[in-house]
Length: 192
Image (cartoon, rainbow, N blue to C red; front, side, top):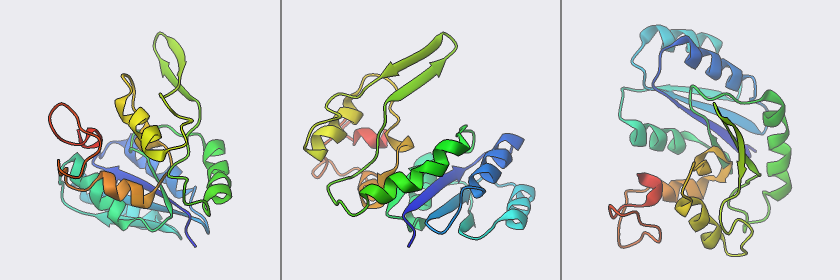
């Protein structure tokens, strides 16, 4: 059973994208799948990736569709209980990725768990900064999610493993009548 889908929407054709995708392919295993949606339009990149794809890795080549469409299509291909989005230019530590399946396995049976968060550290040219989202320890999942979406600073919600069903809801078309989280433009905060 796939517990974690690591999803990579990729529209770049630079060497950095190749490197990050190859790194992600190394994380695949019996409970971890890698889903790459390549919308770069590069035939050379698609051919290269087809040649190196391995077990529990899927490569989907599609025409460019825009960032929201790419992420939605990549999410639709995921089969894991949890999804973890990685951009094709993100740097991830292999040691952290190696422990992630065990952490997910420890909470997968608890339907009250919608995602996994840890203390967050942002590294900038001026130094490192630790921060916490408001209401991160609230018992109500909607209150916790609201804390992520209302935070006035970096929002790394999509960079945390989240239940696939929760992410599917977040990527639905932004229907104002159903959305508990709204931005000033009237759409869901997670869609802007």
